[in-house]
Structure formats: C-alpha cells, structure tokens
Image 1 (cartoon, rainbow, N blue to C red):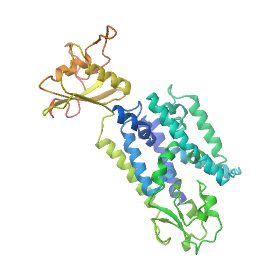
Image 2 (tube, one colour; image 1 turned 120 degrees about the vertical axis):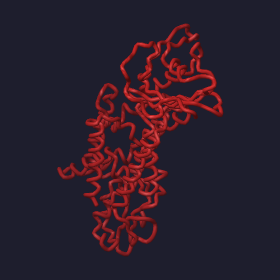
Image 3 (cartoon, helix red, strand yellow; image 1 turned 90 degrees about the vertical axis):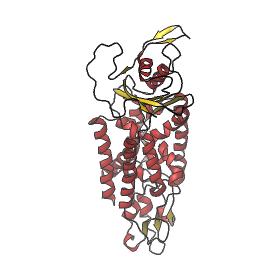
Image 4 (cartoon, rainbow, N blue to C red; image 1 turned 90 degrees about the horizontal axis):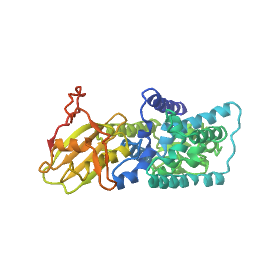
Length: 407
C-alpha cells in the first residue's frame, strides 16, 4: 500500500515539475484552490483573476467530488506540497531525528488556523481583485519559474514548512492549508472510511502513531474525520490486518473491504475528467453582455494580439463598448480567452445594426474619451486583419468558426 502511494505521489510531483520547467506551462491554471479564489469574481464580474483559467473550476470541482467519496485523498496522493512534506519527515526519521510529540488538543487547536487563513485569503483576494496570497504561497515557490512575480516571502514560507516537516508530519497540510478548509464539509461526510473491528483489534496503538494526520484510529470504530487522507498507513502497520482488524471501504461491517486501487483509480478518473472537460468545454474566462439579445444574431471569432490577461480583457471591452463614431449599436456580447501571445475572442452582435467590419474597426481604432478629452491608441491587433491595406504577410490559419455565422 505504501509503495503504491509513493509511486502515485512521485508521478504527480514529476508531472508538475516537467509541466512547469520543461513544457513551461502555467501550473496555476490547474490548481484547485485557484478555482476557489476566482469563483466570486467570476460570478460577480464575469472575468477571472490574472494567471487563472476556467480549468481551475474544473479541477476544483473534480477534487471536491472526489472528496465526497475518498475524503482528502487528493492531499495524500496528488498534492506536491503534501508529498514533499511527508518525504522530508520520513527522511528525517531515517537520519535519526525524533519527531515532536504534539498533544492532541494542541493539534486540534492549531488545525483551526486553516479556516482563518482561508477567510483572510478570500477576503483579501476579492477586495483587491488579484492573487495577493501568491506572494506567500509555498506552492507557488514550487511551481513558479522564479521570475519577477514571486516574492522572497514565498521562499521564506516554503523554507519554514521544510524545516517544520523535519519534526512534524505534514504541518502545513494539518494546520494552515486553506484548501484543506475547503475540503472539510465535503470530506466530513464522505462515503468511504477506515473501519476498526473491536474483536480482532489488539489495541496496540500502532495505527494511531502511523497516521500522518494524528487521528486516534485506535479509539474509534469508524474514521469519519474530515482530515483523513485515505492513505492506508494505519492498515499498513496494523499487525492484525490479516484478521480484519482494520479495513477501508463504504459504511457497513468491517469485513467489507475495498482495495487501494479504488482510491487511485477514483482520483485519477476525477482529475482526468477535469482535464478533458477543460479542453472539450472551453468556457470563456472573460464575459460581458450588453443589451437585449435579438431573435437573430451573428458572431465572429478573432485571434487578437494584446489580449493577454484580465486587465487587457477589460480594456478590450472598453474599446468594443465605446461611445464615439466607431460605436457598436444594439446587442453586444464579448467572450474572451486571454493568452500570453495571441488571445481569442468571440463577439456576438445584432446583424441588423452592425457587421463584422465595424467590430474589427472598434477593436483597432483609437478611442476618444470625452471624460478626459484625450485619445487612446488601441493596443490590440487582429490576426489577418489589415485596416490600412498594407498587404501584411498572410496570418496563420484561424480556428474553425472564425467567420461570421448566424446565431
């Protein structure tokens, strides 16, 4: 059991590092906590915080769905911070460092800190409209390519977790992780649990000492604690496992036992489904709608240079929702997928009042703002659109559906 979990942990850590430093992907877009941070802003304003994407929502939904069945298995099998912290503790034991004994009541009191951390992070994020926690995030210290957007505080926090992990098993996961606080109401009522058989249990207490989350497994008949990782460490060390003293599975008699493969398979199925959904259902990360939708609409899909993040998407809306000679009359809906190089936008409009050419002019023409009596040059250019007739080089092919079409 332990070996299987180590293999899964190593695979997820390796996948994260390869994705960030080899493929040079944006790991933040696959962080479940990013979906939690972005939910309120997306609901209220129709846009996502910079560096995040709708993939965060899919992954967040997947791990919370998994928690309803497998408890906090994501933390015990897939989270890189949890894996590294656990490895450090076990390495320290091999080197002869004795782990600190944290009294149960102190452990439970410290575990309340994660709820305070969650409240502070969400409040600050919603008020500021940006990822303020990133500057202190130990996860970001791992998945960042260490450019100008990371502060030394992230390294300080990460270093503190490394040192603490040498003496306490998974301290960040137990006491401070805000995602653990999000998991709680889902994991608390999860289907599966560790079950102890009183008739075959010898009461040796090895299961409780082996639990990375300090759950007193030897004192309960069924482990329903939300912090359970479904890691099976207690079953691994139990001398009476063969006699059914400890089993894992759905509610019911302890004799009913599910294999550990259910945890791994269920978790991979949920995460794989999230990745597939992110590719198959690419919901716009920026959305704006104006006016009443007419019975007939048309839309145009464009590849836009300069459409890079939430801020530029808001400016993109500013140019399309203008009130000057290039104004777009009637109904208007903007769906945008910002990207570091070439973003994508879908503009839906009333073909009785405007057309595709007017849409493109509104995006690229300078905008006069009467409020401060000045012109603002458009930072956007449309791939394949040459408003000045300069015979620009042929653009790369546009994805299917980029021309006007009936709605």
